Structures are given as structure tokens and as C-alpha cells.
Amino acid sequence: QLVTVTAERDQLTHEIRNLHKQVKKAEGRAEACDNRLRKSERARATIKQQLEQALAFSRELISDQETLLRQLAERTHETTHVVRVGSENAVRMDTLRSKLKGLERGAKVQLDVLEQRMKAQEAGMNKAKASWAKEMGKLKSAIKEKDATIEQLQQERNKSKEEVELVWEAVAADTQRVKEAVRIAELLPSDDGDG
Image (cartoon, rainbow, N blue to C red; front, side):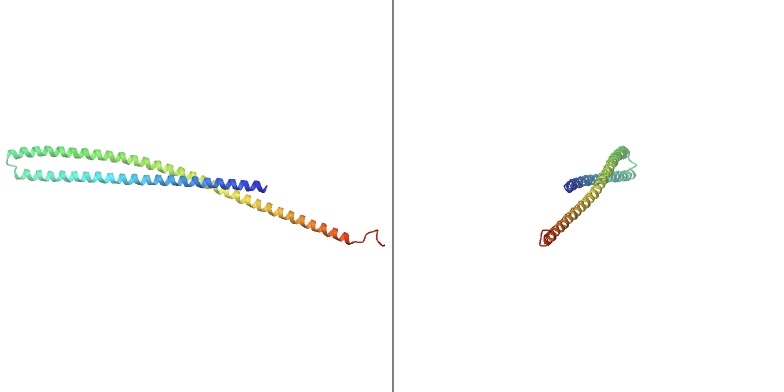
């Protein structure tokens, strides 16, 4: 039985090592996903910042052009030629404003799409992390159970050793008693003696 208990203990120890390896792999996958998520979030923030800067620059450019147009119209309002030029500039400004609005709409659409992708990716990562956490919880529970089994088997092995030692001690004591009885018997006078 000692051999069986030892073999079971070794098997359980091997299983626990494998479970620890699986836990480390799951933790590594979770960390890699966290890193990818952080990189995606940084990329989203960078793109959003660049779009906001481009829109701010476009608005500033439009504002400067409108200011120049007003100054030009105020100073040269009396000339038909300037009025015509001003009208052409006004048309160009309307075109620029329309383009700016289109750019803003396009940027908003891109940001919305990016935001949806990031949310979907984040939800996927959270789901994966929850799954890995559940898996690691099961593995740790299995490890705890195996540890308890090993402890029980070790106690049984120690108890068996103690029982074997007690048996050997009893055998040794009985042997000693038999030897002592034989020695005493040899010292006793024989019935065929001088009596």
C-alpha cells in the first residue's frame, strides 16, 4: 500500500505542476491582451487628437479668410470690380465652409466607427479575461483539492510506516521473550538428573 500511496502522490504532484503551467499560460495570454488593448487605446487617442487638430486648423483658416474678406469688402465696397471679387470670394468661402462641414462629418463618422470597434474589442477582451479568470479559478481549486489529497496520502503513508514499525517492535519483543524462555529452560535441571 505504501508503494500505491507514493505512486498516487507522485501522479498528483505531476498533475499540479501541469495545472500551474496552464495557469501561467492563461495569465500570459491575459497580459498580452491587456497590452494590445492599451496600444489600441493609445492609437485611438492619437487619431482623435490629430483629427481635432486638423479641424481646429481648418476652422482657424476659415476664420482668417472670413476676416480678410470682410476687411476687403469694407475698404473697397464702392468698386464694382471689388464687389464681384468679393462675391467670388464669398462663394469660395461658402465652398470652404461646406468642405469643412463635410470634413467634420467624415471625422465624426470615423471616430464613431473607431469608438465602436474599440468598445467591441474591449468587450471581447473583458469576456476573454472573465473566461480565463474562471478557468484559473477552476485550476486553483483543482490544485487545492490535489494538495489536500496529497496531504491525506502522506498522513496515511506515515501512519502505515508507524504501524509497520510497531509490528516490527512487537515481533522483536516476542523474539526476545522466546529467546529468554529458551535460555531459562536450558538452565533448569533435567528430570533425568541426579534426583
